[in-house]
Length: 247
Image (cartoon, rainbow, N blue to C red; front, top):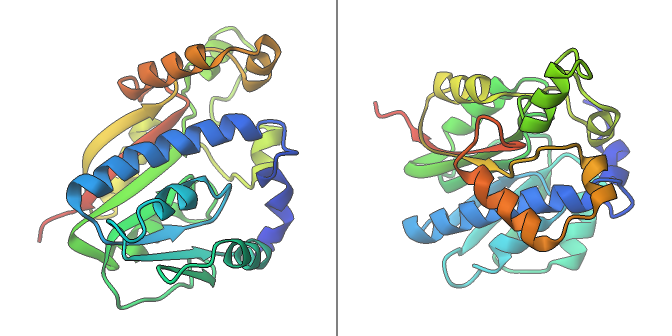
């Protein structure tokens, strides 16, 4: 297994697109939290610590909706830092690779926000954790979209030959692939789940670097988020809620 501590710098405020990534994580967390509240999911398994945005959002539900939150991560440094900074009886944080984690416990919610683009075999991860989900539980996923509007524009303008090519920023984050809406939905369904909801996370018409240069205000960014909800096929990221296939 590779040393995941090598990617930590890309998850700090020093990373060029840190603020943009936080926007996507926040929107992902907002959708997930609304679903968890609605379905009264009391115990949650999170794959990955990342920017700590999702963990922080879930922590707001400790003692009200969530009575057990288990986070696993392959970076020992991230795990040690998170445990030190977020002490809670509700929370358990474990240093383990996703491929090696084992549990007989059935979780109400499995949370894999921006995980499947990082792992060697995303189908293996989805199938492995299928058995850890309650029959009425929910799987939450978010992934970057190869066919985001800004990438489509770049492709048709002759500036991006391969829609699925990874950028320098992708490599710094430890990304291994891009999905599009067809490939991620097929993968989820083939792994034993029924998709119940699909949303987009921000309609992004230009690159992250161009967005930073224009310094769009919060109202514009909120508008792009709202537009993205109903346009997942061309939004910058794809959000999915799924259940186990009935036996």
